Image 1 (cartoon, helix red, strand yellow):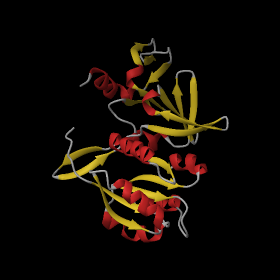
Image 2 (tube, helix red, strand yellow; image 1 turned 45 degrees about the vertical axis):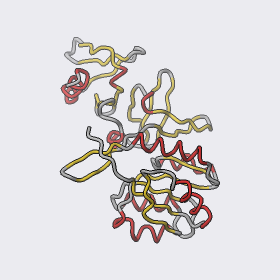
Image 3 (cartoon, rainbow, N blue to C red; image 1 turned 90 degrees about the horizontal axis):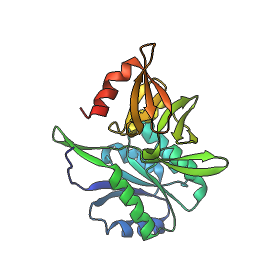
Image 4 (cartoon, rainbow, N blue to C red; image 1 turned 90 degrees about the vertical axis):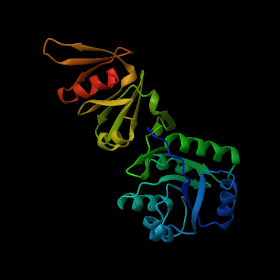
Length: 249
């Protein structure tokens, strides 16, 4: 993959002038961040969003008329997919923020060390590629927030052994642990790194690094054996791609 260096077009959306100033000051020390616009409302930002073509948006959750969550919903409905960092003074929006697949969630007042971690995470997720002279980004999930037993768990995607459809959720299996993430298999599959995860059945995706063996059965089927002994059925339409991926072709 060819890595192309350019500024990350960044937009700040917050109805609090002091919060905008604080964030702008902190980002000024980041050489690859270019703040191209600031807005005091989500409505104003949405009017210009298509023309701006932001790569990264710092989006306040609580604003008059349209909340940050409303703004993100409208962006997605319009087909825009900027990387969004939610900002707010309240931590009870965390689960909803990650359900909306925000890049991160930062509390006010801002701390330089916390913002630095956010930017590190952002840079790790951005893969700059050149395609016909145009530069674009490909982003894969690195972690998701799930709720289990009234607690919020941050699950690292590279620690997931396999995923399966579970009604309106996707079940994430990490060894003996299992977490339900509110999404669909169709929605999450494009967000998984295809070099690491492969669909092996219409209801199953597996972390290729966990595979130890492909076992034939008497019914002429193949079973995918994982490190922990889990046995998963390999659907015929997915066999060739999985073999190529395993063999590094």
